[in-house]
Length: 125
Image 1 (cartoon, rainbow, N blue to C red):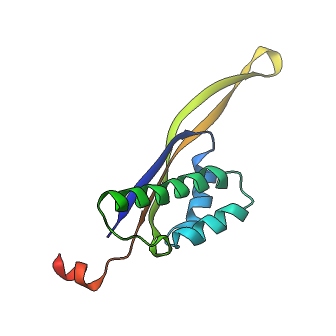
Image 2 (cartoon, helix red, strand yellow; image 1 turned 135 degrees about the vertical axis):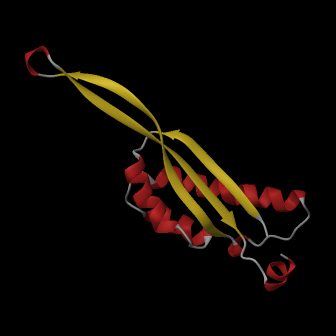
Image 3 (cartoon, rainbow, N blue to C red; image 1 turned 90 degrees about the vertical axis):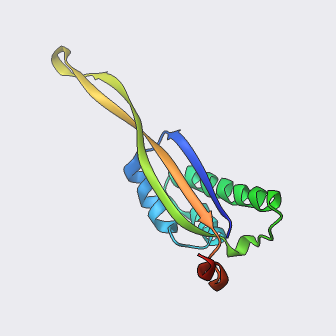
């Protein structure tokens, strides 16, 4: 079983918006997830697309290094989640000399793709 991880940190999209996109692809086949993200209208779909593509490439490299056969059509998104990153705090002038705070939130996107376990691998465990 091949399993690979890809992370993108400090992405300038709010975690709430990124989670809406990640929920679309969780549990899907990796190539199907790329197709979904390519045509998703949300702005957060572009960085998530890059992370999924990177995870697929990482799986390919990992399989090549361990001399395993890897068919990319077998890969699926086993885990995908979004954590909150640092928040950039900015100030905007408001009425009567006050200042209003603007929070510019960032996200850490993590995607894990893997091949499904065969019956022999389950029995070996």
